[in-house]
Amino acid sequence: ELPKEGVITCISPSNIALVKYWGKRPVQIPENASISFTLDNCKTTTKLQYKKRKIVEDNFSFELFFEGKPKPDFKPKIQSFFERTYPYLPFLKEYTFTIETSNTFPHSSGIASSASGMSALSYCLMQVEKIINPAISDIELLKKSSFLARLGSGSACRSIEGPITVWGKHPDIKGSNNAYAVPFPFSIHQNFDNYQDTILLIDKGEKQVSSTVGHDLMHGHPFATKRFEQASENITLLKEILQSGDLDAFVKVVESEALTLHAMMMTSLPYFILMKPNTLSVIQKIWEYRNATGSKVCFTLDAGANVHVLYPDSEKNQVLEFITSELVAYCQNGQYICDKIGWGAKKM
Ligand code: PMV
Image 1: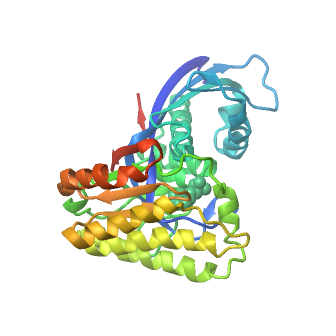
Image 2: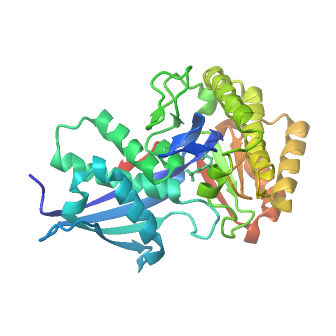
């Protein structure tokens, strides 16, 4: 029996890929497996109100609010998310929904909110599913939340759980598959406990290339086949590194992945340079600092100019000192966000 009405609030984080997902087939099937740190501070809170409709029509009924204000420009994204997930959530047409979301990070920060936003909404919808179908196990609920999040935005499926998740079928990662992300199924070395990610906001402008366009650029890309092979090899390397705690090897794989992602964009047609001069200055400074101190700090990048500075918890004081004295000068309005590895979606 379907409940008449109710309200559910969930909170879900963003994530940062170590091995990048770039290239997909319909429907949101990745060309290569990817692996990410789930974050802790960059989160979306979503309040989902649902009310049974008097007359069920063949459409979806929902209203959207972002930070308290109606948000019509998000409607098409949610509409297509509902269309895609309806086969798996037949109750979607039975209710009128009010979706209220807010982010812990500034909205024009150049930080993509699709991973946290889509995972939070998916997790909320699975709480409704749980009320309708109480027999669903906790494990099933997590799997299906990740599955739904993937249909909203590929990388969002990696945000449901933490601290490290893998999405995409890979021969070395048992249980890995293209439909949803799974937690890294091996022990994680203590070097990665509380791993830090300080996000430098280099350029807060609108994304030059949407990720949809970006993934498409890998179709017919001259280096696509080699890139997908390399990503797969990097997963194999990271699988060992995360267990052994070899931070020198970690730095190499992670920085190479970031630069390769950008190399793919620079060598596609049309081509894009998403880094800014300050992105390169920051990278240069990180390399100098590492050479001078033996620190294990490294960088990674998303499909934009911002830099994620990754470092072990044991180096927190020194690296933060380095960041504030040397790197913040390259940030737009001096803005940066201190984040770290986290645990995934939660019901409030
Ligand atoms: O989830 P999407 O379609 O927005 O793609 C995200 C792709 C990258 O952030 C660039 C890499 C990744 O694996 O997160």
